[in-house]
Image 1 (cartoon, one colour):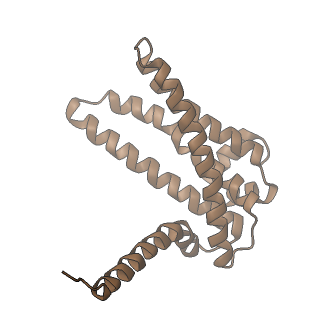
Image 2 (cartoon, helix red, strand yellow; image 1 turned 90 degrees about the vertical axis):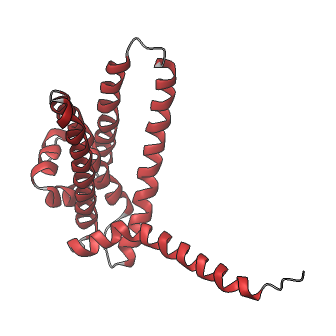
Length: 193
């Protein structure tokens, strides 16, 4: 491992070992490059599809919003997941996890060639193919996030999956607690008519 292309190759074929290396070496520059490529390639494909339409100025603003929103989500997501990973006994660093999670944007690049193949299919299969591609990208991205958590913090696969879903479970638990609290407070409210 070392060069950017070698790191991508390792993420594709040896994700856990690659994520360990990325987290250990804190390859934030390569991670930012992967993130940028993962953002630009799909946007470029969409741009070539709508080139010449009046929506181009709006498209630029939407791209900037999407880029900076995704960057903020990546930073905050790494911080939150690092917190939960440390609670679960992980021994890594936030910067290492941040760098490893940057490579979880790799599946976005694969959307383009898969989308071209799906667009060439007959009408009846095209929608199904696009749905399958979307599902594949989501699963692949989640698998790379699990590999990043495992590699950065030295956790088992099951614990890394729990860490990945911990923020969602915590929000769900908070909503349930709020509903129970409000539900138990309603009978205590005196209604004077």
